[in-house]
Picture 1 (cartoon, rainbow, N blue to C red):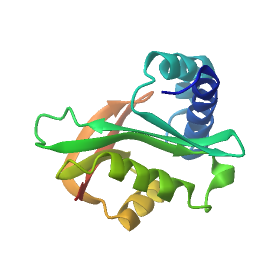
Picture 2: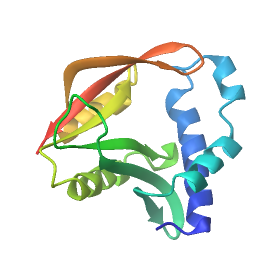
Picture 3: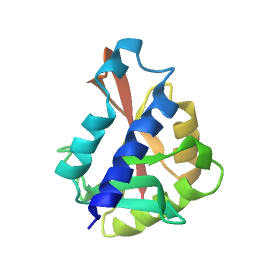
Length: 155
């Protein structure tokens, strides 16, 4: 279970990493609603199944993972979020978080995640880990209608 201090730090990582990862993918008006306070509320309202990565007691990334709720997947886990501050890219933090999540989900036959269309950096990362697109997509509302595509990892 995360401490309140870790929840605060996770909220900041969530807010900041979204700006870093999605600034060119999401419309400008989206950012008026995507506030640090909103991420803070999520961090305190939904603290379960969240694991943080720290460097010298500073939270620099996190992953959220648990059983999938998708009706068209049986015996599947899901990675709901994985984010790292951009200043820590290239230091294997994302890879270690991903390996940790996959270990947490090892009881499942497959693991899913959703990636925003056009998020090429994330797609390359997920593919290197072993995730593959399965042809399923959905529309998400992030200031406008955008497409997320599902990727699967078979254990």
